[in-house]
Image 1 (cartoon, helix red, strand yellow):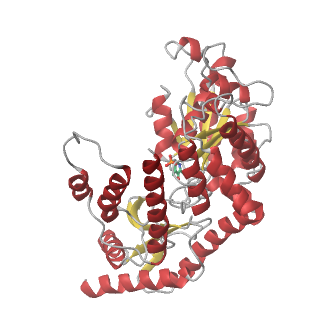
Image 2 (tube, protein in one colour; image 1 turned 30 degrees about the vertical axis):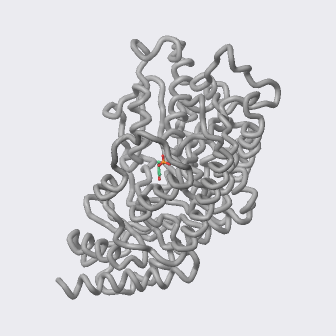
Image 3 (cartoon, rainbow, N blue to C red; image 1 turned 90 degrees about the vertical axis):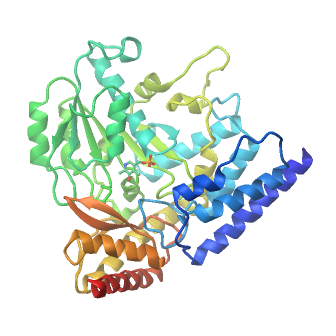
Length: 464
Ligand SMILES: *Cc1c(COP(=O)(O)O)cnc(C)c1O
C-alpha cells in the first residue's frame, strides 16, 4: 500500500514534469492514429493485479505516441488553454485528496474554494456580484445549465412548473438564436426538450454577429415566452453579438437572454477589450470555460445565473443523507447536473490567485495582440488571405483562394510540426483557423508562426 502510493505518485509526477519539459519546444509529429492507440492499449482483462508503479509505467509507454502536444506554445488548434502547471498541480491535489465535492458538510474545503472562486469570477468578468455560479465540465454543460434555468423561470412565469410537470402540455417557448451559434448550444436545447429544429434563427454579419434589425423583426414575431441565445466569441471570428442593443429588447419583451461566452466572455476581464462585450452584463445567464482562457486543466467550465432561485430550482438535488448547506455554506452539487463530482474549485482558485487580475488581463490581451500580429505579417504574403480582421483571438486564413490549396497547406503545417492549426468551414469555404488562447504562447512565436505558415504555403504553391 505504502509502496503503491509512494512509487505510483512519484513516477507520475516525474513523468508529468519531464513531459512538460519535452513538449515545451518540440511539437512531435506524426502522432499515432486512434487505431494505433486502440491496438496499443488493447489486451484481455488482466487476471491478476500488478504493482502500481509498473502499471503507471505501462500507461506512459502506451500513451506517449498518441499524445498531442496541446500544451505546446504554438498549439493553435480548436480553442485550447495551456493546462497551466499551477492549475495542474492544484488538480493533482484534488485527485489525491479524493474529495467528492458535492456537499459542503462532506467536503468543506472543496466547497469553500468553489464559493470564493465563484465570487472572484463574477468580479473579474464584471457580472452581477450576487449571481449564482455552477462549476461544470465545460461550456457545453454550462450552456445546458443556463438554458435549464431559463426554461424553468420562463415557464414558471406562465404558471407552469416544468420541474414537476415536465414539458408535455407546457406553453411553447420561442428560442431566438444567431445562425453562427456554437453547436453545443443546440445540444443544450436538445437535452432540455426545447428542440433544435424549432428555433428561430437570426441573420448575422461577416463576424457571425446577429443583425439588430433581423433580431428585432424576429422578436416582434415571437409568440409566448422568449429565450434569446447570444454569443460572446464566435468560434471562427471571435465576434460578439451586439449585446447593448439586443439585450434591452429582450428585457422589454420579458424574455431571458443566455450568453455562450466560452472564451469570448473573458474580454470582460481586459479594460481595453471591453468595447467588444459591452452590455453583456445585462443578460440573465452566461456560460464560460475555465479550460480555455483561464488555462485550468480539463475539465472546467462555469455556468453563471442572475436568478439564483431559478438556478437552484433547475439543478438542486435533495436527499435525506446530505445535510443542505446553511447560512454562508455552499453545496457545489446544487448548481450542476451532478452529485458526486470533481473539486474544480481548487484549480480555479489556484490559477486566479497565480495570475491575479492584472495577469489575466495581460494574458487575454497578449493573445489578442498575437493574433493580430500574425495576421499583419501574413497579409503581406502573396496568395494568403486573412479572411477577416481579427477582433479578438481567433484568426482565419485562406490560401490560393481555394479549398484544395487551403487544406493542403493545413496538411503541410501539420507535417512541418512547427505549430498546430486545423481546418474549419466558414461561409461554405475551408479555412485554416488559429486560436490564440494559451498562456504558453510567447511574443517570439509571432514571427516563428507567420514564417512557418508562409513556408508551408510556399511548398504547396511549388507542388501545384
Ligand atoms: C468551446 C466552446 C463551447 C463548448 O465548450 P466545452 O468546454 O468544449 O464544453 C461552446 N461554445 C463556444 C463558443 C466554444 O468556443
